[in-house]
Image 1 (tube, one colour):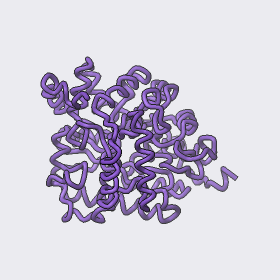
Image 2 (cartoon, rainbow, N blue to C red):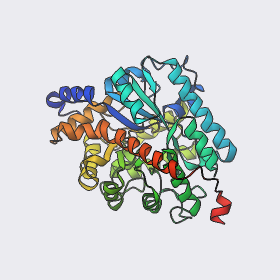
Image 3 (cartoon, rainbow, N blue to C red):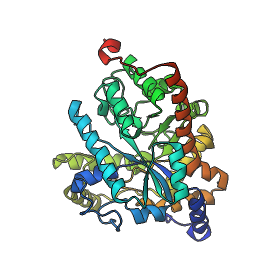
Image 4 (tube, one colour):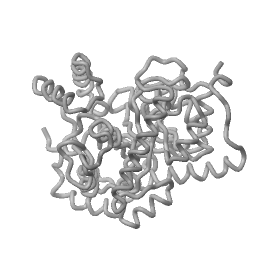
Length: 402
């Protein structure tokens, strides 16, 4: 098996230098949920200023080593929570991120805009934005959507692993056929606010509907290419191609079960093992991880590498164009990661692999920093224009979908 950093001697120093000038904007990190699950946001127990590699994929020293300049922190809540319970848990997640930013002001800079991201980079701090992962977080309420925006949420993933009342998920049985009328109104209201529409996790029909409706760039905060690994969580080529005219950005994920075909069946068996022991497949508590380790010992896991991710990025660049790709690792949201991309310190290994493949510095700068910042800036410009034309929507799901 090839080593994950086989080109390190030739390219790793160049990769680190490039990231010093053009740091990574990562589209999706589940650290807030990990902190909720492990210590209920108690940063005295898990101090992110210290090495937390035994418990987490993410801490401040490793973010620095990895060349991360901006992070969208996911304020995800499970779809097992619904209604007001999902809203309350999302608010707790937002509060958890704020506690984190308050504790480490020298390292993390709150960011609400593309200008804030650029200012944080000049200051040498990591721009910290928030993304809500799943439309269940708004409980079918456009007013709640607006409240999340006011609290700092700058993207919303329309679904997580289950359908919502107004949009189909990639991993659930189709019900709406994409977006309902209310779902289209959600997209329009996100455009009016300047909140990025995130299409990771949604069905391909939902992707196409959302791009048709949206007047602002959409993003995929953590999805890869379906043509390279045929998993429903990935983006079909026809949708990738539409990002050229939409202005959107598809941010490649590192999750092996989405990027390595051999890992798909293995992960299904590992998830079934967790369920058999009474655990959710996304459970990352110590007990669940022990079960994972025992399963892996008996059933060796197919190993992805930085080259696996690079294969997706090569394809995404060819189909969508270099102006429409980015990175969304999904750290602390998955039990397994590629060799060489084991935690947030690993981004230089991916950049080194791409340098070996002949990617230019201008193209890599777009991948790591420029594309994501531009997409948010463009969404902000759309919001200014649309807010001048119309006020907040007070539509309800009952009025549009009945």
